[in-house]
Image 1 (cartoon, rainbow, N blue to C red):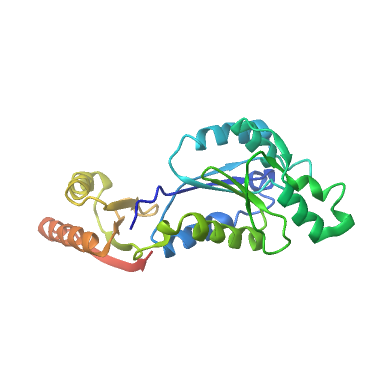
Image 2: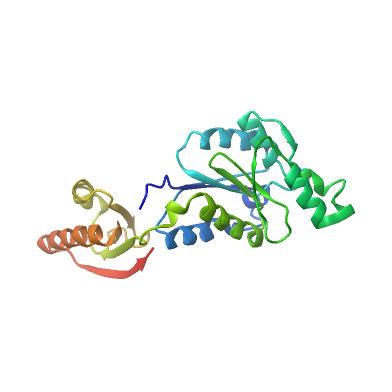
Length: 254
């Protein structure tokens, strides 16, 4: 697969931080990326505070990942993402002619004076088509700003992936192999994990102690099938030599 920089998510809205609405974008995007052999490398949740969104965008612009931002691009006073993006990029916020046309075509006279505000975008923004109501999202560099409504945002995210990042959708999905190791503290496994990572480039390891049984470890190996198979063989040999009891967890194809 051609190198893909990975993905980050920005989840924007006071309602998420207050618990009045549960985020659905993170689990959906994790599953979407799994189907394409990709990972969500980070996710940040931010309230409807323009200064905080600007600070977060200033940080995310310095990261290598492709970023999807969900929420805050509407016309109500709590929607601050369009304005924050313009500030973070140092661009004026101005009516986007194509976005104006789309909103006027969709809503007619009812587009003004409120809905038309959603056409005010950072100068030079690229539009992301909205298949539900034609009010577009927008892109700046490798950041892609989508509405908070899943029925709109999710097909818009897939459109961005197919149009701008087809190289990230190629190839076979990764394989994950997980086992439960009994009566073993996590610290005993650290040298082994470090050795596996050194000998198998591209391998990723997860290590999660059971919260109820601290000496039971859920250990996962993830990567292409050949790498996981080779590292898994070494892991099993080490466990056998050490007399450790273990059992497999049903493997996932990611």
